[in-house]
Image (tube, rainbow, N blue to C red; front, top):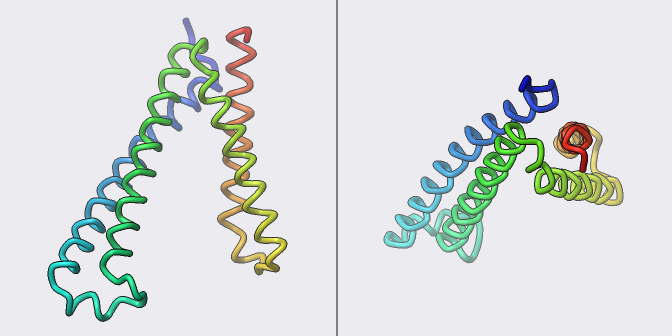
Length: 145
């Protein structure tokens, strides 16, 4: 069966998410290593701009690694849905959640009177979330759900 444009785009998005997730996981491990190294040498932690010092670096590294794992799980769901449109529901639900969170981030930036130049990341995130929602919705219609 021929893949539709929406399924091809979802497949490519899945591949890109695998790459981004892998790079983020690598970054998380590097930061975790830096935090562990800074915990062993207290003099390194003195230059960090927080009271927690090395523990904060370690926590950030763990958070990045966990986020990377979720990105890779999402990439797997995207690729599975691109191959079999019947598996689109998790991607569709996560796309709705992503769009809602992006809108919330944009509203938060507007309420805090953030400069427009600083809202670019929120706007790009919202645009991609809406694009993924449209693609997931097209595949959902194709699957007849």
